[in-house]
Image (tube, rainbow, N blue to C red):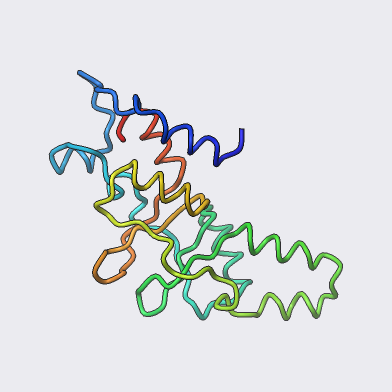
Length: 172
């Protein structure tokens, strides 16, 4: 089953919001704020690896390898201005397999500003799990940045795996 089909199937299951009487599997942040529906802030990694808009493709590859993230929020002056996906970078580099060493060196020194996706692919901290799942499905990305609604400042990164796990546990 394709990933998009999995997302759609989970969204269509209205029974995912079942009551877990006597069981509280919510993350600590949800318990600390007094319960209720889980939000993006309850599931996010509050310290994701980021990359500056002026960084090179080579620096991005290193950041992907070190962090294990599949998406890097691209920052300019502390604001998220886009996303860089490892699959896109690796696909582009895979097409250069037969290229000369010099050509590959030139490509690796290019700024990521030539490759990152436009801004707008974000979620907000107060969004509930169902809304985050819908956004991840719509964007077809494995991870999305959580940003402050008013300032656009990066607060964290949320993964599709964490959102799907929350949905399976009934926190939608």
